[in-house]
Figure 1 (tube, rainbow, N blue to C red):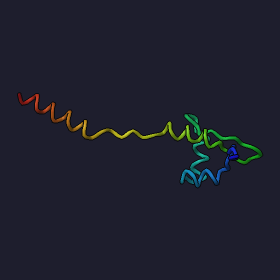
Figure 2 (figure 1 turned 135 degrees about the vertical axis):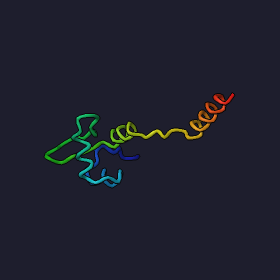
Figure 3 (figure 1 turned 45 degrees about the vertical axis):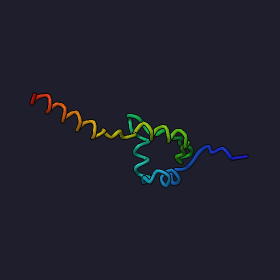
Figure 4 (figure 1 turned 30 degrees about the vertical axis):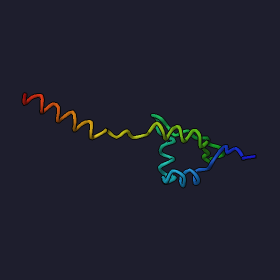
Length: 81
């Protein structure tokens, strides 16, 4: 039977996200969309499933350059005719 992972500490989260502990602490204290954390006796703990959801909300959506170029070409072509 597989063990259920409940909480990870700041160091482990830092390693998993490739972010410094200082950066993570900053994200925890943000007023807008803070990184979910639990403080037990001064120690920060995190639930990985909550962190994953938080990270997903920061996903960068890159524009499709091909669509933009096609639209520009069509616009120019329509102006010439």
